[in-house]
Image 1 (cartoon, rainbow, N blue to C red):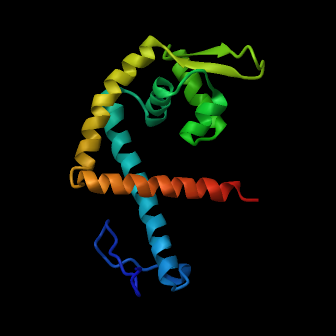
Image 2 (image 1 turned 120 degrees about the horizontal axis):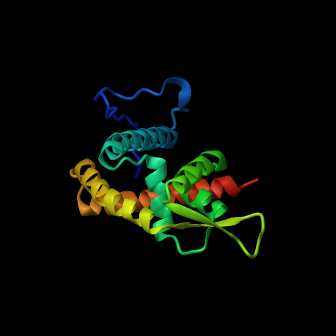
Length: 175
């Protein structure tokens, strides 16, 4: 059962969160507003935290190691469209990342024999070596950030985030 009134402190400063005229006053609307605010804040903070530590540790930007990681676990063949969808990013920044990774010998692009307009992307042994450096560092950073969560809390949070992702996908597919 939802509370009659929703009031939550901002995790950044401990002060009550005020939405002003951005919320209808309905408890569900206020909770949705707060959840999206916190979700955005958590994503930005996680991204900033991991980026600030990964670059000095491995020399790889987030866009580079995330692209390599997806290529290392995705069943081949992987096209640029597949990669764009898996990473949830637009083509221009993805193409810049792929160009950089290819220049460094971490990926290779192969002509798609079924579609001359597309190419397959595969990770090279050198790219796999980068992932072997990134993964332990990422595990350390994740461990520090999530130290206050129980296994049960992480499981519940994962299920909730999966539902949010599906809800956004469903909403995007509506006319």
